[in-house]
Length: 527
Image 1: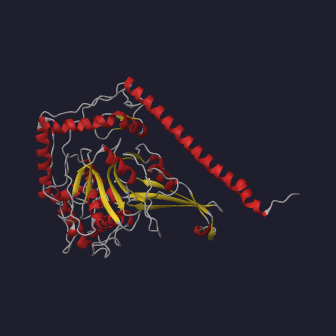
Image 2: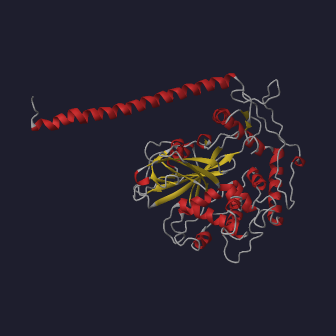
């Protein structure tokens, strides 16, 4: 038998090992690219079919209703009520011969409706997303513009809203379940009152204003800009729901945020967040000393501090039942519940656990290219093995197990954090991650309900790095006002953003904040 010469060994290794391996990798890449092309062509074909269908079948007409007089608005200044200006719902809707409401896209029996115009109905969240992207987004925006520019409505709406807000700000006494004693139903803040804040529809409630950089404070400026366009929080602060019953003798974060929001209502130049930053050092000694900080950590500190203040009137966190702690205003706004299940692969014992969350932190390494990919990876089963083995209570030893996470209760304001900073490394993951303006969270929920948790994006925090470094850089924010216009805010600079800028934001965003769209039963937030 002939043996290869020693000089031929590298050549044989190259031919028999390296080249097949390279060919295998290239074939895999080619196969993935072919699958992507097939998916793109299929989506294009479906889009073309949908476009032809939309042209062939007239969509539901949406005509704005303009009240003839200000008497059609009701403003209440009662101490225990918070009624806001509302329009009578007289929009036409598709109805079958049997009297059932029909889906505007597929004409199946409808179960939900658009929460903005409250006229177009759908059978599922999928139909709503497709119809929104095709025609209904323009219809809703046209409706808002027409309603806001109507001569008979503009003056009366503004006067009514301003009068309502001013009366509530000046004469509002702490509501039942606000910051005082718990209401009879056992909630620290009634959820019905939170829904009224969430449904409050006011055009141009606050105009975007720049914030002064107080020395590496761009992280705080970006987060504050996002919080001050979070509608339920802004309405809550404008009503002085906290300060009217605050008994703190020293500095209070909620009272300071109320003053900050009140100043935003006035016209003028950039504001300074100096008072907030200087006093935040009493909560965390690492914040506000002029060093560069992480925007996500600052947001967590603000939310945790506001939650702690909400519990102070009831004895503090140590004296309030854990389940009751989830009924504060802050919890209603940002809080959700995460479900985790661990299954022992030896005895098949399952352990379930529910955890309160204020935001979602998603990994974006590996194959993740979109927000949906990151959520899929987050909710996919994970094998616990090796150094990460699970200690089974039944087996009483460390065993192999399988863990899975999912969203059990979707928060009203969803904050998603894209983990671009790698632990133990200075480099930053600068890959582009796409994410939609409307997000359907139903595939990542524990169960399937009648109300699909759909979210509309309204603010994004972007970290601009220096030489791909994660420990330094600059933060800017993109926010959307009540009329749907996007702005790019870089400290004191407030610029109207164009489509190119918004597309860039959708690729390099670090923290995404979006609000849930209320459907059916109720009419209508990464680093």
